[in-house]
Length: 305
Length: 305
Image (cartoon, rainbow over all chains, first blue to last red; front, side, top):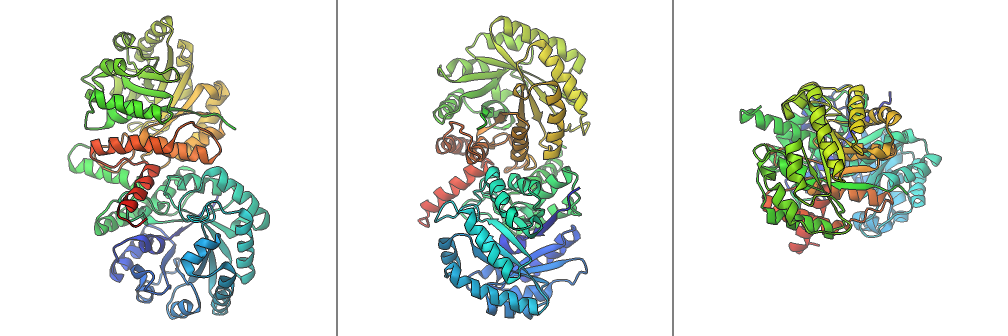
């Protein structure tokens, strides 16, 4: 059976899209809960300038407060040398750099052209690796850009090429605005896996239009077995209370276990974490598995079970 | 490109699971809206005893009030001869009979063993066909039963066999409690399509655990191209406001169109219908496409677009 690596990105990609900023203490509790549930790869924060993402402004404090666990890897985003220097003062295990597949999104997001971005990232990768740290690359808007629409695969392939040349060990392909559909994912992966081994690619889908799970299924069929997801499906758009963010870890785990793929993650324990966060944020998280468990709990409470 | 037939079941399978009963007038408006959006196959009601499903107690009135449209087929469930007689007094185009793949669910749902059920259904099919009406068969709990757990495929195959012998033209395979996962769907269809042509099967998935869309994708891969869905993803559990019911037609259409499969359904027009129903029911409907469109609308309203 296929081995799948789930990278839990809720503390970073989820929380950075929430209006409410959680306390460092609460984030540590979430991390502890996720680890108890069996999560081993946690992207916990981002060392971007605190002004940009106030929700993650406690990056250093959080990274220092996380419990050291032998089988758990903590990851963090680093945008540039300055961010890396802050990150290096913490015990984070692994870093991720990021850029966009489309010029316009890249400029809007990090205020640089792609060509201007590469040297910044190269410096980060080289310094990180000289300190013995692995670096992942994120490419955003691979399956569609809010400004440019469709993004040619050759552009993504060229960016992956540059990232691997720099020394990243893996590239996570992001459907940042949640527009991807299965045949598109299949087509993109068919081309990318001609150039790069599928083991060096990861799928990062947002569920904005309900296609995140089917897109990860297509990834598995293409041999891409590293999948990003967020507990509860955290990270929805602040303008629609029920709108979806990242693929929900609960839903991914449910599908994988049903496919005979052992994830090592306990769904009940994971849902406990999401329920707590849901209560703190004061809004429902979109994970379907979470909601169906909650429905059972509510029914039992009403004595109708 | 594959041709897909979408059977819109929201007015029946969706509404029968809602606590609020909509007026006949509102249902007619919904049907008109769905037809304007391009829906051509509408399961509109059920001729079960009104006491069982008060939400659909207006079956005859509704069926008579629906606008006659040359390219639109109205369908209705009929449980037995009595129901069929009521249905035959209306201009409904096509009927559907139903039973469960698991004995216990069948008994709890229609108070009969499977063996006791067959003659009742046979009578319906024969009488309906003698009046020139096509009959579809529904098999519930194909992918799992709330009482028995896993359901052996050979049981489903035997039931399909009986239904086709009676003269149904198609069997819709129901994941009634929304537990199916892709490999399971693939395995079930691999066996069933050894016995029956895929054109005579349909997929009917509930999104309770987020897997409905990926399961329909697996159907398409197996050549099963008739798919049931409900506008807005109507039909969620009343104990959890955000919980999912049927696969959302919006999300299915979005995926299919993204795969180059023309559905003839206009997403904007479809979302308009769901937004109206959402407002009437006083709760969010779970379709992701609907929610993302609503998010854009809200954003524009707040002047942040």
